[in-house]
Length: 353
Ligand SMILES: Nc1nc2c(ncn2[C@@H]2O[C@H](COP(=O)(O)OP(=O)(O)OP(=O)(O)O)[C@@H](O)[C@H]2O)c(=O)[nH]1
Ligand SMILES: [Zn+2]
Figure 1 (cartoon, helix red, strand yellow):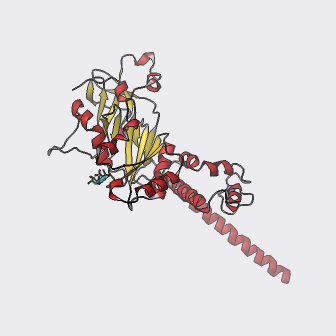
Figure 2: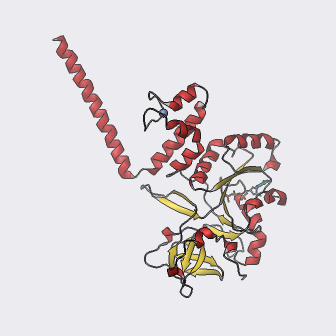
Figure 3: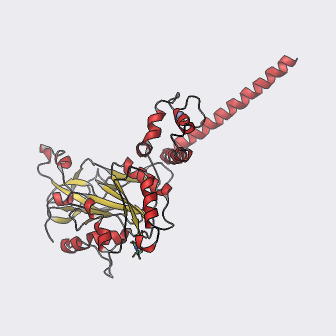
């Protein structure tokens, strides 16, 4: 197994600065796979199996994390602060978030030049990337299977100025893949999201093939196929690292208010001047956002997309307790309204008398 420098694995001053004198007997490794009680770390010595102490469990770790471990026992002692993290709402009734990957630099939001292309879905992924502090790059694949690649590209570019780049490629040929490599250089970590069949595995395989072979850490199943059942960290040919996230097609929005505020920064800015602090921009008096819509400065469609994303985020972010409280509050308000109406009727009756 070849030896890698920590910088090859994405180590940077951000992590080095977190080390203290107490850590001098520990070594840094980067979490390469994390499954229940089995986690592996990549370090200067190659791939090692990690041991969990009582106070750290697999749920506390994400692929891409930087960990400090004991060099002999491989016991994890500390998880270093992340410079970015991608999470989603965990399965189940509670509004808990599940950590997916950590210390990601670029997220390739992937779709194809066909019926998969959907601006609303692309915008959802963009919110996730912005919320996670990860650079979003939009990748349109299958440019070779359409006569309308230029139209798709123009439509994609119109979605948001927040994309660092919008690429339109044939993922099955080398020069298509090469356009992604400028994001995958030494010290950089990238990952892909997008629907099934848009070409994520094709791109990951091409971006990592040569480097994985030399590193000798490509995990294969009994038939020799590349296994993609859980998230894992891989070397990119261009010098950086790729996190494979199989099964990450649908990422329910959860706790991404910051990402929504950034994507819709025009609405966010105006909202600060609405008369009411918790203005929902529906029909409130003194609403600066509605005024901007009336003036033609913000399109109704854009405000509508903001409303939908905000509603989804709020619903997914509230706990069962909050849902119950909200239901109670609605019932209470309803009762109060009915009582008020009843009293009004009574008064009117009283007047008649
Ligand atoms: N012609 C052409 N075929 C492509 C392109 N990108 C992907 N494909 C093909 O589309 C099929 C699906 O590609 P995958 O890489 O498996 O897609 P995926 O996004 O990884 O799909 P999941 O693993 O289900 O999430 C494969 O047969 C690819 O060869 C492209 O740009 N042009
Ligand atoms: Zn308003």
